[in-house]
Image (cartoon, rainbow, N blue to C red):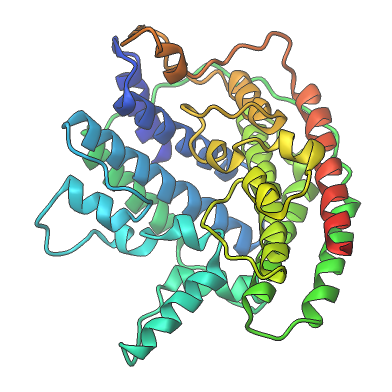
Length: 384
């Protein structure tokens, strides 16, 4: 189970060691599993689209970081990029076949955010391969983004296979999960988000004016998909009854907002005849467009990185602070405990989780401001 793996990781994190790249990767593995647990422990009904996006994303990122931990621990180089096949091949070279979970998720870091572009890349291969095999999860994400009916694969199998692989990669032995002290229950108010629906309507109107199957239309459809998921997360925001569930909802909200803003700015770049350079930060798009993103640019400073790799990230915006403060509420084991600094710059390797007075309601209030300012920016951007 996810809890067995996280319990095993906690045992490793408690051992005195230096703060280094391996330990950071292990802490991020733990964080993604904790996010997944927060999502799974809610008993409310969620759409198949949201379930696939959350579960597959955190499974893929947890595997990526676990493989990174193993490679760093062995002194092996870590391949650039996020392709899980390449990373697994470095971890266990010479294997004839990849584990099924690697084949299933190997590019989900990309497919979760850019499914229509992933689909176009596979279709381009038809010039060489008469029948390129479209990965099942990519096909599902494409169908959801195009608003077509589809059904998920068995996500329980995905979670089980992920945990099995993580136990192997991290060298964990099966163990009984220790009973933890009772988690304090929380109660939070809803977040006003009527603007999200209005922006989706604006996107639908703009999409109908564009030629079908163009990259510009794809960017707006991917933004729309993120906002549809965001609507669902915010509709159910009050269902969070533990800090862990709140943590998962906050991180989902911020990642979806950041992606929707980035996709709409990408659309404007393409409309201006500019070439996309593969960067994903809002500040990068703003620099290329020559615009001032104001509060939104500051809020999401380096959040494309922070939302996936939170431990060793120099992000300074409000979104990053909310991620850190949610982690304080969860009381997850800080990586600084029992660690020996490796250099005078060790502070840059630690996850500083210090903010006295953090409460669930304060986090909700600040997140509502982030949602409001982001929606205002998105609405204005679509009017241009």
